[in-house]
Image (cartoon, rainbow, N blue to C red):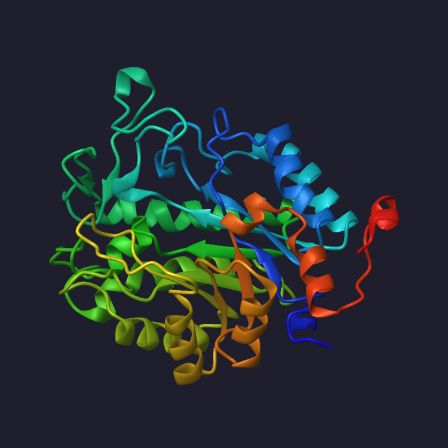
Length: 354
């Protein structure tokens, strides 16, 4: 059996293969509600054979959205449609995961499908919050510095969102602490210039993330895995670096986190990223080998041979695909054929099996 199609057991969950759908914002919601687009978008990837389907960055509060069209989980009314989606995913042999997120200073911006720029309060926007009152760039809104009371609300919002996620049928929760969103903003000295217990030293800058981890964990049953998406570098001098990520991962492992989903960038518009095939995988590899933590990797992974090589080389344990799944919802089915694996197809599609 190839490594790509070998199962992976994480706590009480077994992934049937190592191929997962990375969270991808769809900017298709009204007031945070999932709809038929989300059902088809996520459900078709389950039909296509992915073992893990992680729903897009899902806001834990209205002010935690990136845009007014983001998916949300800040009220009980959101649960009904999400439950329909997770039921379909499970019926088709995949595990449903959700990425809980807060945009911080990158919030109240237009959905990319509609343009770029700030959304005014008059047009349905809001005042974004951040560790420090530093905008992401001149085209982004000026954030309000979070008070200690505001920080406590963020922790409570993640905790309540985790509870709703479980009620919605999600079996894996991922905390989004990368891509320049709120938890990443606290991690990086470029965006966090606080002078209190949440700023300054490494220990202080990771404090909020650890509080969120423990709040979410308090809602999770023993069998439910917890993922954290972490940044491996800001790609800017003086920012968050790989050694910081290794140090953080060791702490997260001791706190009971099961998988780190390793990505890079998004914190500063000054970043210079050398994008290329598998460009983020070396970071996942280094973190995995330094800490022994299970890792997921993502970023310009586009074919079966490339994914198999990453796993055989023990650079990561899970392959998450984003753009390739947009191009081909049935990537696992075609990848199995390319690697000579005989995997089960949906009964409705058997007559077309490669």
